[in-house]
Image 1 (cartoon, one colour):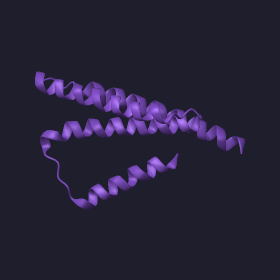
Image 2 (tube, rainbow, N blue to C red; image 1 turned 180 degrees about the vertical axis):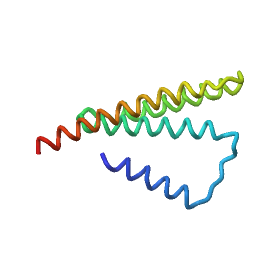
Image 3 (cartoon, rainbow, N blue to C red; image 1 turned 180 degrees about the horizontal axis):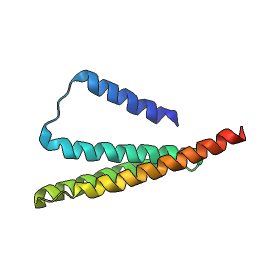
Image 4 (tube, rainbow, N blue to C red; image 1 turned 45 degrees about the vertical axis):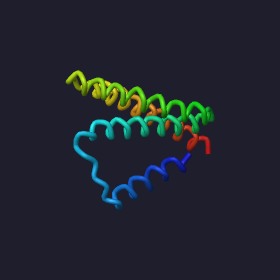
Length: 113
């Protein structure tokens, strides 16, 4: 369960050390992509704690989340509407819900030991 978290941490550190600059026009897409990845990662960790993790669900969830969130952001750009905020809200709600479930599961496991 901790391997994905370590991978994200290492990715952030490497990204900060390389000094790659992303144009401001892509900031919405990068934000949505990061939220989609974090949502999938936290969902995978939650499933792992509940002993329900499946590789195929994890990968397909990541790809579909990225595709639809980025498509929504692109459509919003074309229409001149901030549709990406719908994805930000949805991912935010799911992140906090999954983190709360993980916290409860970890506390339950800690009390058992």
